Length: 111
Image (cartoon, rainbow, N blue to C red; front, side):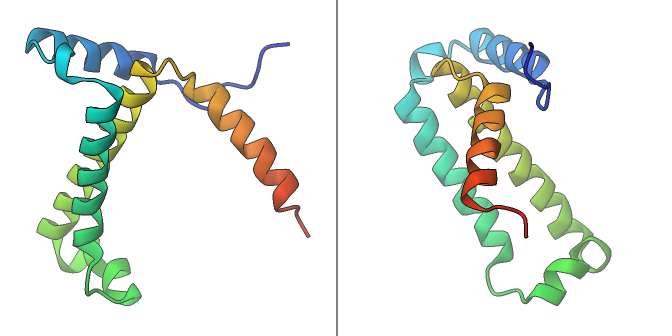
């Protein structure tokens, strides 16, 4: 039986590979370098939330469109580096998510 299809990243994986190939970045896209770049992007994402309370975060889209746009860009950066890292490490994202969700269901059973 085939696992459920929760994540479809093949198109993104291919696009990221072409993007890196077109720029000659392949030698720099080691797992270590991608993880470090991902960590930096997560820091940039966290910086957007720094010093905001929950109400300000909730209202960001309406009250601060420029900051909300920046949020979207940083979320995209995190996703792109994470997908690239998974690809370089030959991780099947769909299967990894299925496996992790199953472990979480055992660890945190529904009440």
